[in-house]
Image (cartoon, rainbow, N blue to C red; front, side):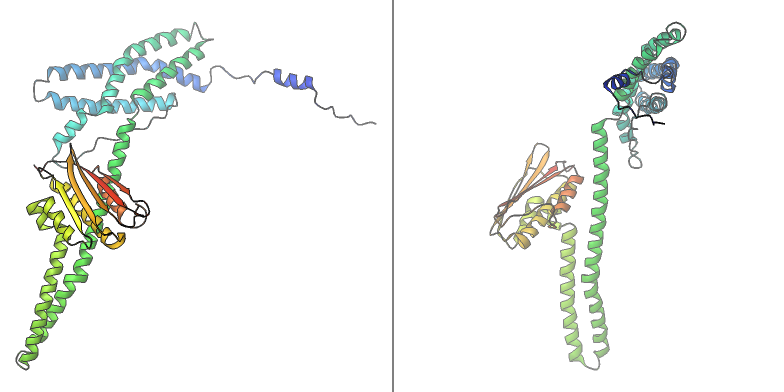
Length: 396
């Protein structure tokens, strides 16, 4: 018995495969029913939201002239955030729309109720949610009026109608209930900057503790031991005791000098008393490279900005002394509108960057934590120009 020879696929078979109909699928699948449920729920949800928004605006508008009006409006905007959260949850469950939750309004420091009130009034998420519910009432009436009769009259085309209306709903949710990209970016930056500030403060505290322990504290311990030995020999060997007292006197001078240097590293007295110009001239005089300082400031900035500017220049001049091989350097400080600008130049070998362990990245992080900028231009062979920019805040 001859076995059947398998037939190779022909062009006609390929044409039959192409003409084969897709598998049968129900028009009313799970996604369609979810979209229909969402569209039918639009009317009651929109009515509740519109009533809340209308009553809020009407009552707050009447009470604007009183003390109660503004806090009530802020509280109402916080309430619209809750409504927006529920609406995003409904869209996520029925429409499959994935919208990130906006960041909460910061609580602020204790006693900063006015600040939190002002932030609630400026909250773009609350105002966009309020606008969302204002325009939703006519849309909810329209979708309910189209979908409910279509369940009985136009049911063959209802899946297509529901898909079109649901897509419009998705666009509204994404457009009005999604968080502001710029606001979220700024919040993320501030959270990161806060971490940098905390880490920097902790590092400074560890440095101060280390300097005290290894410097002045060790000298004071030696001083106490020397004075104890001198006290024991005071009657037996006055000459030896006098020599020990003399040595202890030298230790006291060295300890005082180390404490002065440490205090200068925390916050120099000349900066507090005479301002940035005198403080920068003082730190420039200790640099191993001749430095020309020019400060064009008609007034003094806030103490925090002044301190950051001082320590930025101080560390840059230390880098010039240690790494640049420069013959001269210059420091220019001036104010441009609401910014404090610092430019430090040297004619050294160049090659400085933010990622070579020269402390530049730490300076950039510190300035970034206060909304500042830090730019390094240092080609190989020099010269090096470092530009720092800080926000100007008045000293009041």
